[in-house]
Length: 352
Image (tube, rainbow, N blue to C red; front, side, top):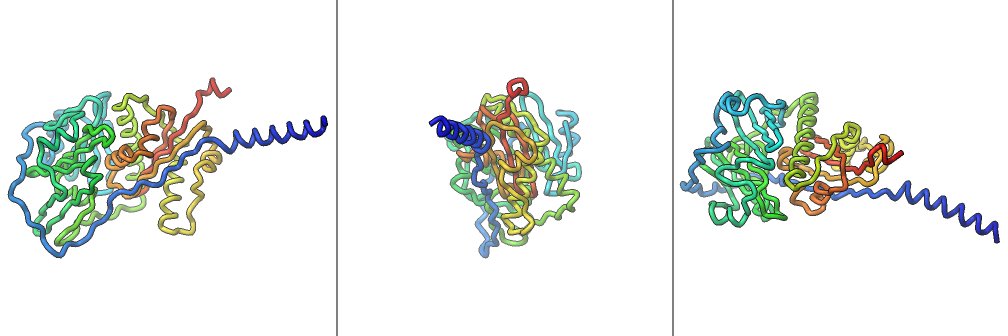
């Protein structure tokens, strides 16, 4: 009887150890897919002569101007970084707002702005989708003519709830909504040629596609690093907007995130040398301690600003982004793919 009891206790302890070691909560969502379809159109669309007048105030007025005009107002950026489209990102940020300014040959091609207290003029921070539909002309298809070419941005039903596109005379506005609250979270003012290069929506065209020079492997790595940093910063901005604490940046975790993302992309492209992409194994192999972890992958997004919008507006990915439990974040970018790995990590004093 005593031997049987001892055998039971030994087996119970082994099972208990196995449970705590192997059953740490690991959440891996299905990759989020961005719109990437670009197809030629045999028939030129009818172009309407009715274009909304460009706003006379606000950030949209800087698109097309020399960057020196922006510097006079905002000063030097916190950093400059490369983009995948041949221009340079000027990154601005403070406790109230976060801005990404695209600069090519000293000219501003776009201004993206978000934050807790920002000027979206002629729009308003927190403006509802219903309010915007009542006051602004919107369409499912937006035609952009560049020389003899016509490009049509085709908005999906999801886009109409989260990423509206408004055409003004000389500039376009991308309005990023939180589809859960239906409130405006960010605005991007952008010129037509840059929008066509970035292809953030499904697109048809008559004429020729505007191609961007493919960066070298060295340049691409720098672009990946900049995109990953923007994704980290935007993740915390969107958490702050939702009254959540900021996540701590973790260099080791970001390395794991990069390995995981590259592995998934390689697998998607059917490469035989794809590394192991099991999240729990990667974390343990790299000595990353965690109580809980979750992973978000966003594939085929134009940039970090579009990727964070996609993550926010996908229910499962949103739960991870806005989870109060997590306190560390690793981010990565590989070409037009993005990744986040969140972990809950106990303070050292608690783990001893």
